[in-house]
Image (cartoon, rainbow, N blue to C red):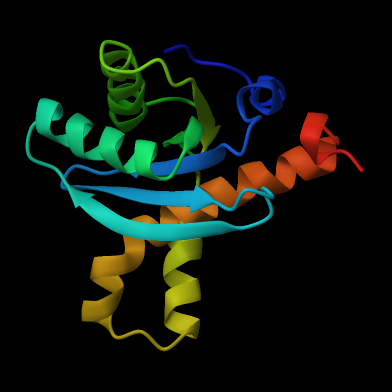
Length: 161
């Protein structure tokens, strides 16, 4: 596993691969997966966190089932651009995944992704209780959609028209 740049993604996603997005929380891991055309991010059920080895096994099984070629991991940067303890946890998660997978990771600034996801769920008239169960995967989808849109704007590789 390696941490790669967004420009390196297209080379890793040939042959029908998809792209996954993760929103790493203390209690859950929100997951979203792209379609094969790299146009839309689709939320998947959250992974309830227990310990790293179990979390990694569940995550890797899902990524294999979804034919994922690379993973976008939300990096919770502070509003001033600095990185605090939560960003350090995300970087540590990516480093720990290096021992169990060859999948490349892209770190993506996720500032306000949970806020945006929650607003969307509120607009869709989800109750507070229902939002709680969907917010992390909705945030993962928001993160992943940002990457898909950025790749489209850059005209990088498979995304160029």
